[in-house]
Image 1: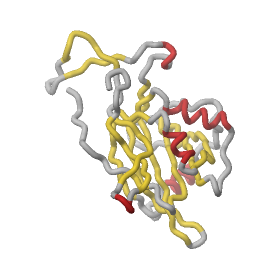
Image 2 (image 1 turned 60 degrees about the horizontal axis):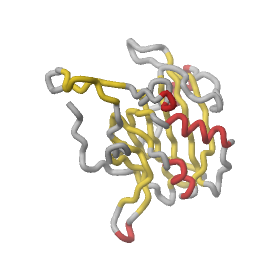
Image 3 (image 1 turned 120 degrees about the vertical axis):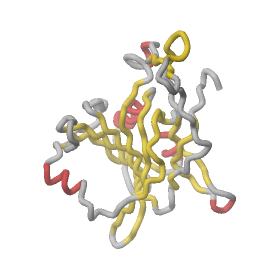
Image 4 (image 1 turned 30 degrees about the horizontal axis):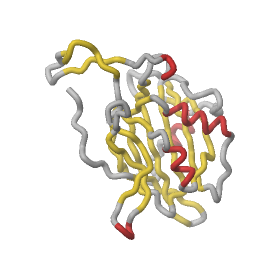
Length: 228
């Protein structure tokens, strides 16, 4: 049985004092493109610092949302709004969850204001596109506080897990990943499995009314280009 899609999920506002937009992808294996630099493995001290409860807590705005794809024009829309991809790296991190592998991999793409940051090499921009093309993720979004020289700003953080490719061996194979639909009792629906498809699309949108309208990162129901 298909999941009922809410009519609306609030977006995360891109404010004048939003200093950073961060996309973070966590996977059990290192699946980042080769162009993404690999940094040193996380140490126990590094893990404790990252998890320090004294850090200012952010606000979850986009709740955990399954089957999320990235809009094809997301990167271009960020560039048009004055953002550049300023940093990217992959790190092997410690995993203390019981019953799990002792480590996992996190790939981070950090966007900054073009007026204050230089863009990374074109092949790393291409790596971001490769990381999100024809793949679904379980996503959630936060607005976090940042502090610099006594000033307070904001960071948008989009955290993605549960990587689910839409095609076997990539889109060029022409072989979509197939899946049976099930009813509420777990019984198969139909006479054959169907291609898996996203339910949501992460994009740059506009929210608010008149003078209060602002750009935001938001989720919109995914529209099938083959069946609009």
